[in-house]
Image 1: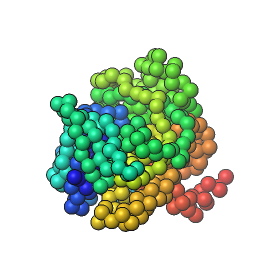
Image 2: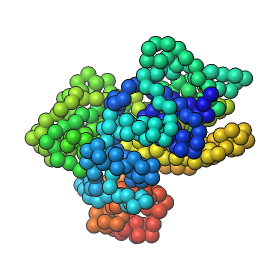
Image 3: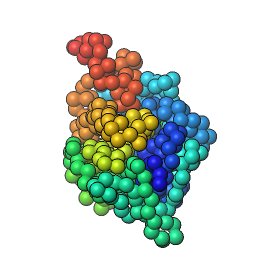
Image 4: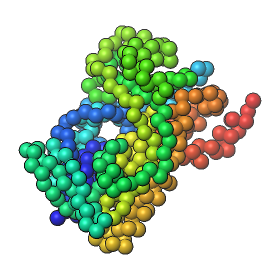
Length: 395
């Protein structure tokens, strides 16, 4: 009998398991993959996520793994270019964009060292119910045997296609249609910082990552997914050439070192977060278009929120229910703004935004504060201050 079973050991599950274990609970962490294993990802960790890694004692390991620090961001669209960087969070302004075969084992190791029992290559096949309450999980071991373990709380950190969400019938409480498709790859010999390029119908993201490689991501409207998928490489290269010509020249001087990865299945939703004996976290509870690269940071923040609210209340029925309600309220309070911002960008219609951003040129503090609204270092309400309104109202 465990206190907590966490399904999924990536950027939502491992921190959640780790933090529960540090509170003294007996935790089982199950992962169907065997690390290190890559996964689709935009890699970027915004300042709040970096601050949490430092608080958890894991940031040094990420640095030691050879992930290039990032301290410069640019945004370019027709008629405007902004350069700057987000404001710091808890003293951390530098960010990182680690490969997932680097990040995920670091997180899992942190969980194990905190006392979590970690089992890889274990595929969860079902939940165990008693009187409509989730009381455990069934899963297959690496050897193919089926086993059952029980827990006071089962945490579904098992992604967009969450088994926990399906088996508990967790409904979507907010939902929007798919908006973009994305394809990306890794390039050697392409110097870069954190770069964003936009024109109507296209978005390009450029991020330095491990092994002196550069991640170059292209975004297309969902309506073009079938055509792009049928001829990925020419569509990818043409998107860069026509959206960011200078970047295209740098790419031409470098070389692509991996195949193209991509998806058109970027769902936008919030799900019901919890029920009797279960709770969802990470992509299982909330997913949005990856165009603003918020997934990893949001998962870290949710892990801190969930475990912080539960604290010592796991075995107190009334206290646990209240803690889970507060966690669910946090999801709405903390992530609704980021969700709407991602949808706004994913429309790939930069007209109104570009008009505003042109007026920020020459006002470095406002440029940095704008970048901070995406990172989470500055709220939208704080961004729209007197200084900004004065600049925007100038002819």
